Every structure is written in C-alpha cells, then in structure tokens.
Length: 362
Image 1: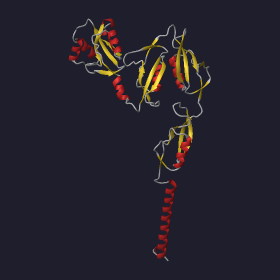
Image 2 (image 1 turned 45 degrees about the vertical axis):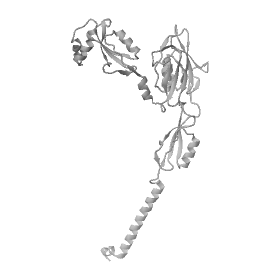
Image 3 (image 1 turned 30 degrees about the vertical axis):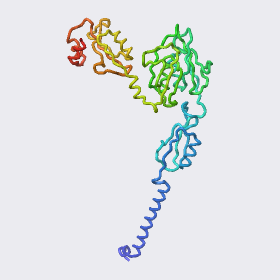
Image 4 (image 1 turned 90 degrees about the horizontal axis):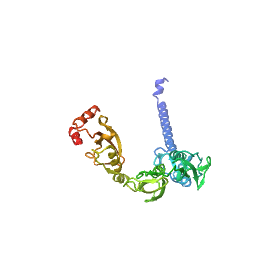
C-alpha cells in the first residue's frame, strides 16, 4: 500500500482522531490539576496582625490557612512587649493559601546598652548621645561652682550611675549640670503643636524640666501639645534653668490641629517704617517676629539709620505666622532726596513702584 493510500485510509484517520483526543485530554487534565495545585483564582486577604500577640496570630493564621515566621524583634518602649510591630506582606494583600507572613515583634526581654560617658559634655551633646542610644532624659538638676550647663553627674533612681553599666533602653537618666556663678534664666521654647517626644526634647535642651503632663483625650500615641504653662503664646517667658514646664496634650486624631495652629500661631504684622534699627527689632520681637536680612542704603551707619521699607509689609499682608523673618531696608535719617531709593534698587536688580517709594519716603 502506498503512503498516500495509508494516510487516507479509515484505519489511519481513526487512530489519528484517537491520538488527538488523548493529547487534548492530557492537556486539559494537566491544566486543571495545575489550577487545583496553585489555587488559581482563589486568594486570601492578609489580616492586620500589628499589635497582636503571637498566640492570637497563631489562631488567625491557622483559620485562614496561612503561615507565619518571626524573623526579627525590635525594642520599642511605646508598644507592648511580645506584640507584632510589623508584617510582610502588608495587611489587605491578596495571597495564596499557605503563604508565609514574616513578622517583626517587640522584644520581650529588655534590650541593654552600656551607660555612656557624659561628664563635662554640654547638655545638648548629652541629650544627643542619650537619644542615639534610645535612653530618655529625666530630671535636670543644677549644682554650684561648675561650668554652666555642663554635665557633672548622671543619675538613675536617685543614685549615680557609673560609665559602662548595662542599662535598659528607654530608661530615664537624670542629669546633674553646672550652673556657673549663678543660675541664669533661659527662654521658654514654643512647643504648641509638637508631638510629645519632640516637645520634651525641645524643653530639655533649653535647660528646663518637664513638669505635669496631662492627656486630655487619654491618647499618648498620637499626642501633640495643645497648651503649655508658662504660655508663650501671649508673651515671651524666661525661667531659671531647671524650672518646670507643664504640658497639656490633645490627640492628633480627635482634634483638628491644623485649624487650631492656624489661629493661635498667627500674629498681626506691625508697621516699622520710620523706626531706628533697635526700635524696629524690639517691636518685631514683641510681636513674636524675627529680623531677617538688613540692607543699609548707601552704607548708612546704623546709628543714623531709620527703616525705609519692610518685607512683608502690613499694607500687603495684615497677619503672618509667628517667628516669620522680616527683611528691612534702611535709609539715613538725614536723607530726604527723592529718587535715591529707586537708584539703589535698580543697582541691585530690583524695581520698585514710584508710588510705593514715595509713600515709604513719607
């Protein structure tokens, strides 16, 4: 039988159809088995495990056919020991069954560090070192006859702690500082709106102690300063080094700080044209503002200068944020020549409107 006749025969066609059917069936069953094995189209939403203890994590992952591995632990004084600090994959991620979730937990055993050498360092240097080791600043005390604001002793639980002593991270270290010949006053920093940790650090680096802390919303995690005593919003305050500053907190979740700060940190911009440099500085400081760049037209001596122009100006901006820097231009108190200021600004590459210059000259 010829090849052509064999190919066109009923027997060949019959077996060829059987072979195609078998190949298709094998492929179909293989794909179905692969779908079953890989759970194609079936996913599980990863639960939020942060803050839970391992016992609770175990129940949840077993119920959802997931696995977990604790691959790291960290020190965090703000979280409960043994709880989950972070996870990978993140919550709400879609994964397949038996996927492993990698967890980082808060260390149960205290993490220890060696007490650093702080003697004779400045307060700012000591605070920086303690923060880098995740140690907290406790009470600041002052003693006579030493360099002002230099560390003389470090104390823990009312006793002196020696350099190199193992100490738990998060421990509060009291510092004994020198006050020099006399205990001088230090300005109270404005900490309204700051998170708790940032506010405490600002007060302590100003050589002041944290007094009473009141949490008006019973939320320590999201707490920001709502009010401080002494209240530096109404006027500037200075206290003797080592004095207490009381802090009142509101929750950043419960309270609208943006709206509140927009209101309490905005001040009226004073008009200082015509005043001497010292008078202008005093006026700005009383308004909780700062002197920015100062320009003296024709190098006029400071003692002969009066303010010609300020930027920003209350003509254009009635109110500004506290601590805004005001740029000031001065002219000689004896100079009444018109056109001098236009010439000066042209040399500096700036252009002033003639009417504005005339108004300032007046």
